[in-house]
Image 1: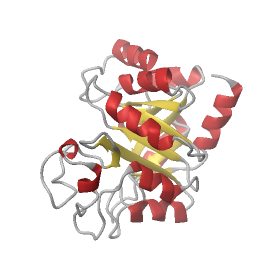
Image 2: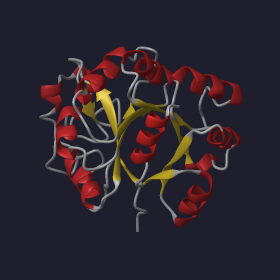
Image 3: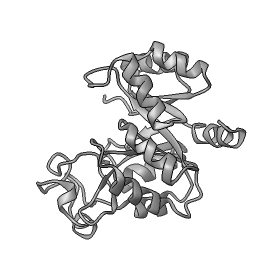
Length: 241
């Protein structure tokens, strides 16, 4: 990693990241209110993006609408305008586009964008994210479980910081060899690691080679203690009380 890229990464992970924004207490995940609360707390923001039917990046975690909104069906079955009229469950908010949320954040918080692309057809969503980020000047990186996302950005938007999201539980590429191949293929600058897997030989090896390790989803004081020993920054949620 070049010295300038390492400096950019250090600036990105200087603060803890609120997972899907600072949600809870009446604020739904991946909502404008959750992002505004994270900014007010002076923390970073982690959010998720899906692709709409007309090829735009929208801020939403699930492929399907029903868990988080009052509608049913798949996200990619609606246009960005249609999604923008769908109300998020138990709130007055609607599904925002990534462009809208970037304008809201406006560089006031470090930002991790998790690209939700489950198969090798990543081009439409990656291109939408890359286009939305043009001209954005705040600290930001993209990351994904899918190594093809990092590979796409390495080829078409190489200046963008890239991360590989990793869990060692229930994944078809859970073996060490497959994790190494995924890291190589994604050309990542950092890992976002499942807190349940730390300490991890794979993560420790990556840190020794100079990669930074963030960890998700940190919810308890025990999680925080583990993260302090084995990671460089946390992606957290406030523990329910």
